[in-house]
Image 1 (cartoon, rainbow, N blue to C red):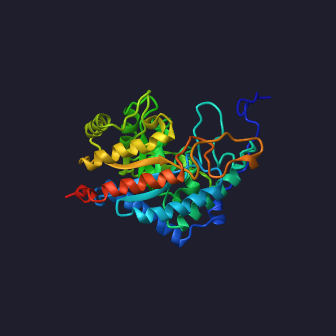
Image 2 (image 1 turned 120 degrees about the vertical axis):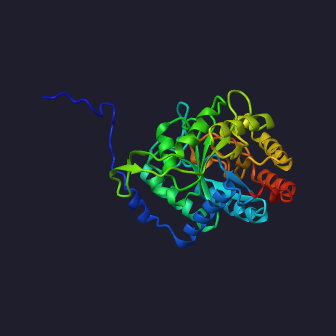
Image 3 (image 1 turned 180 degrees about the horizontal axis):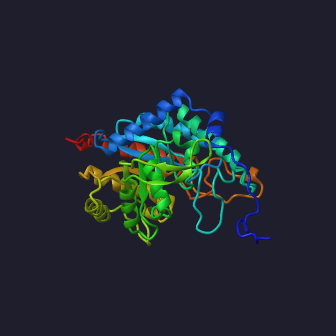
Length: 357
């Protein structure tokens, strides 16, 4: 008898519905499709300098409570209308969380936050949440972590991030080359720009790789390349990198790689030393650079929820504070509104000069 050589550490393999089956349960509506496509077009026009505005990726560090998430989305939709002549607002809807060691991996992986890992439920509920946000007329952004997940909800996403831990991954660069959205590659956690710049360059080229089709079957995915990749500065290596010197170095790195000079600043993470109260200061600095004539800065990211701060996940989930993050600390809704309204006031007269000739 031949000895067993595979799945030695696998406790079980459960059937997962195909992307097509999940989409049948939560079908794309005409209004949602219009929102997604309009969101992508606006982002592409900003990156092409056809639209002089900035884009703002703003929302919770992660979605754990769809009710609070939709409450936030409704408020953000109203605020987006107030600042639309300066900002294209996209809601941050992150379902997957990379873990340095252990911890809650996000709504799709463990939607009940009880280590039952009901991934089928999480995927369906996550898709439904994205649909609800799109029905409000608000485009959504997410981080692409699992290479299979975009097949399930990518049709509801307008902007995608490749995180600092995965920007160097060939799998994620290949995936990004086939995504239908603009993609922001973050610099490495040590602050190096190389992974982000090389990620943008790699994703702009065609690739062929193993993946899944709509029916959940193994397939060879062949991509055209994504021409809307850009660099996201999030700080790292013990220091921020949103200052004028750091932005200039990023511009030089992109120019050396013969890439468009498109840079987004993440106001959170190492740029604010993971202190949410510093995010407004980062935003103010970026706005000042744009006001002074910088043309490479095209957007900002803000971690924001209804309530400021963060909270641990309690054993009794009824003790969770409504509208407060369970992952990275966020600024409050009041602070978010103040940040965008103040920046809008400063920038709206300066932005028309940024339009391409």
